[in-house]
Amino acid sequence: MACASVALFAQVAPAHAVQAGSPADLRPVTRSEPTQPGVQRTMRPRATVTASRSKAAVAGKPTPAASDLAGKVKGPLQIIISLDKQQLTLYSGDDVIAHSRVSTGQAGRSTPTGVFSIIQKDRWHRSNLYDDAPMWFMQRITWSGVALHQGIVPNYPASHGCIRLPEAFARQLWTTTKLGARVIIARGEVVPVAISHPSLFAPRQEPAAPAMSQADALKAVEQAWTFAQLASKSPLTGMTVTDLPTPGVPAIEPPKANTPANTRPLKPGPVSVFISRKEGKLYVRKGFEPVFDTPVAIAEPNAPLGTHVFTAIAAGADNGALRWTVVTMPKAPAGAAAALDRISIPQAAVDRISELVSVGASLIVSDQGLGSETGVGTDFIVLTR
Image 1 (cartoon, helix red, strand yellow):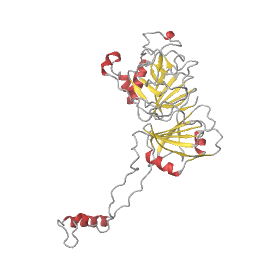
Image 2 (cartoon, helix red, strand yellow):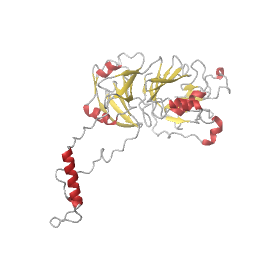
Image 3 (cartoon, rainbow, N blue to C red):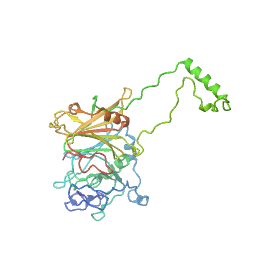
Image 4 (tube, rainbow, N blue to C red):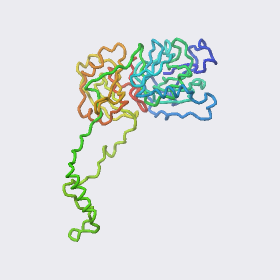
């Protein structure tokens, strides 16, 4: 899918000059295109692009306002876009830190609704299909061609599917976000609300080691000092002091690997969990790569759950707990808590996720399946339209 826009500064072309058939907002960075709709690319998208410093004269350095916005970030970011209001709201945790007007897809080339994340950033992006059209401060949310970027923003939908931002705000947002930041696009206005539920994951707590009494501690020090005086091998055993066990102290075994030898280490970044009613499965990703999946039991499997995005925004007051918020997509037939009540996750999966969960973790519950937009180099992408 291609989205289109003349991503020029407002003083270059007036808003009324944007018409269907104008240069595209964004096409996939890779030159290869799918042969038919719904066919997922097999080649890996290119890595994050760093802007060339030689172009600094074109747009200059980030403005002080960009630094001001970044300074307001105190928790995980969520970008929520209302198509009906043509408005973007930026949340840090559960606090609103910025608003901006936007221009989204026009009739026939509408912007998709659903759950996305930023999967690529390119300060100096240009269209690779439509006359090298500039799309500065590009933040991609699908490999099929949808992104946020600077462009002309009239007071109505005018793009070919992308989300255009005013120049000043596009610059600020690009400076503030990181890869993986959540993006939610809905018809109406949705907001994150606080939620507490026993099914929401909590970090695994290791059992505390038993406390050693003062007498035992003194005895251990005396034993260590005695063995330290032995400088030669025992004439009876030929063993050195390091070979001798300390009375009352269990032998220490070398640490064991946490994962099998053929398992790659997990990439950094918050863990993401997706539960699909359609597929009856739970999927886990970290650092845009799959970790594992497992079947889950869902009560009344033919009844809709809706789409709900849970985010761990901060550590809770209780030891080991997390504070969660949830964004429920409009017209969800079931509330977020009711949706969680119907899902039973295997304990082994809960234990594995608990080892990975931290502030910034997310859980998406949806009636939708794992669509073709979720793939190499993405978090979970859930299309609700």
